Amino acid sequence: MSKLSSEAISRVNALLIAVFLLSASSAVIADTFQHGQHIEPAYEGWRPNGDGTFSFMFGYMNENWTEQPDVEIGDNNSFSPGNADRGQPTHFLPRRNRFTFEVVVPSDWGERELIWTLKVNGVERKAYATLKADYLVDNMVIASETGSLGPGTSSPESRSNTAPTVTIQGDDIRTAQVGEEMTFVTQVVDDGLPVARRESTIDADALKRRMMRPPTRITVGKVNGLFLSWNKYRGPGNVTFDPPMPKPWEDTRTSANSPWGALWLPPEPPEDGFYEVTVTFDEPGTYVLWGRADDGGLYHDGYITVNVSE
Image 1 (cartoon, rainbow, N blue to C red):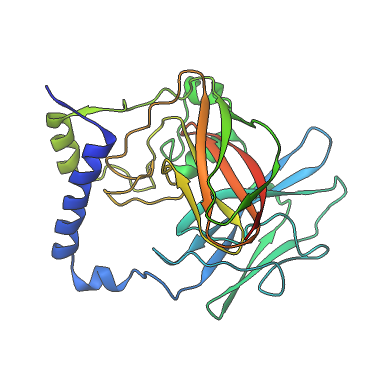
Image 2 (cartoon, rainbow, N blue to C red):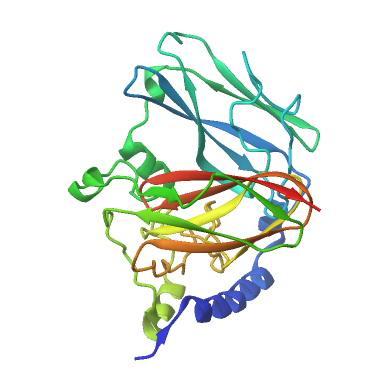
């Protein structure tokens, strides 16, 4: 039986999505937007830290499918009370992005609120973070909310899972020039849990069955499998990554290179766990690149700052 790689499946996916768009009703298409919409900041919950502090966890819902707004720190992208810059992104990927970053608050935070304000395309929205017990988050909540588990379920495997670790080789602050290729290496270590539900290849018969299978979950579904994704987090221009990385956001389209896509296959990880990535920048300025290792259930992030000159 022939095996199909991720590249071959991408070609099949492109055909499938074209057929879908031709057959989709105008009512469905009218409910989605490519650009011009706002972004909803989201408070995901909080978790305690070993030193007595607390981490507030935030994400967002970009209502656009293609537009990726850049919103600098200031009146349109700020936290209050206190410092407006709490490490939030200024570049926003499409659609739903969960547990994107955390803000640490002191042990005596009490009943206060921390408010994240975003104003995009003329619409202002706020997320309100508190230490209310209903918002307490643990690993099972993260795995469930991101789609690794079904709603309200767990297993010995998922309870034993630990997050992968990201270690960037070399300096965290670097320099580059516009148009110049910059290569860096990231080491990802994981415990192998949760066990990947799919291999990196698939035979033609299984592919056909999967294409014809109707959705089986009412909540977001995610394919468990280790991957690394690098993306722009802050910066004035466009950043190109080579090789292309899986998407860390919930792109549920069949053709998506995303673990939430129906036909997505986990990429084959390097045997030694070292990923080499090349990036180029099209404008000068200071950039922050965000790397996320994700095993399906849990994640770990790393960051590189790059000062780009002409």
